[in-house]
Length: 406
Ligand SMILES: [Zn+2]
Ligand SMILES: [Zn+2]
Image (tube, rainbow, N blue to C red; front, side):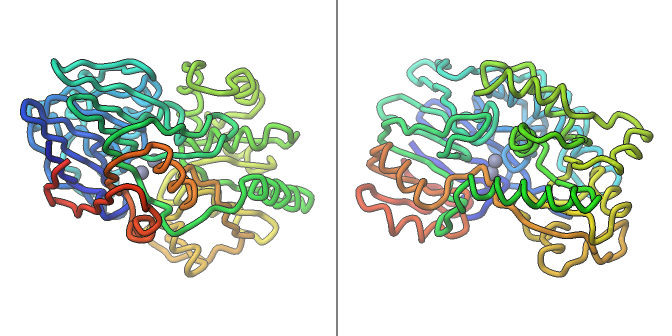
């Protein structure tokens, strides 16, 4: 068996890994980097099946291109399959508005969606002598890792979260001979989640007491839903806007995939949805606005910043800000690009580490718990730092495009 990263091996983003057995070729994830301009992985060979770990663009943004290469069956958990079309159609829309090139068009999105095949947690797909089973990873609602069994056992994780959060249980290791695992936070630890939540809530409280509005940019998938639950025991007037609103509603259809489903449903009923221009005006007088995009690269958040750009209002970033995004520019320079004009942000800007990834120590624990002979580290920029803490398994650090033996 051989494997090759088309992207996302030695970097965070645009992930795609081809696994070739003597009879089959499978693809695990196929994403793009939604930077400006976007970047893409290498082109995939014709494959017998695609297994998607979760609905983040760096794992799914290149899927429609497969339609140009003869198509492929795409397997993932039902919540993942329901969210992917929202992300892909939005990418096409943004590319059209900004005049950037995507290697596919809207009809490719239409076609690839037709080949979506649900694979629930615990279910197994059989390809003659191969069995592929899905398991939860704690990263997002519906995020899956895949256990491939033939004469050997391989696990491909996608992105993982070890701690229990409001909506999900942390990932549990499963024994495997070969483990392909993400390493985004190699060399880095997260502050304790409870402290992050307390700081976040007290920062909001200060803004609200000061008659201000707290604008909370959040990724549509994962972060927006989790933050809603962080706000569960408050009585603020909370508005939710943009793709975050759409995805929160779509995920309501998957009670089995959400730890505290009844509470999530209740919370979603209590918050106010921005559905019109007049709602957007009303939201400006609320307490908290939860909106997309999480990295300030588009979406209603930019409108809110331009309307509320005053020190009494808060702008609370809640996720990692990738290089070349407006969010990163804000953290580094204090300004963002608003319709082509560098604009100083006068709001109270803060960053909260609500990461959905395991930190360094948890990655080591997860790897040790899986007891693999061999570990392939991917989706990381500092993989060496993790490699040096793994003592009981052989560690492989493949580069993009480099074929390696499994
Ligand atoms: Zn992810
Ligand atoms: Zn990722």
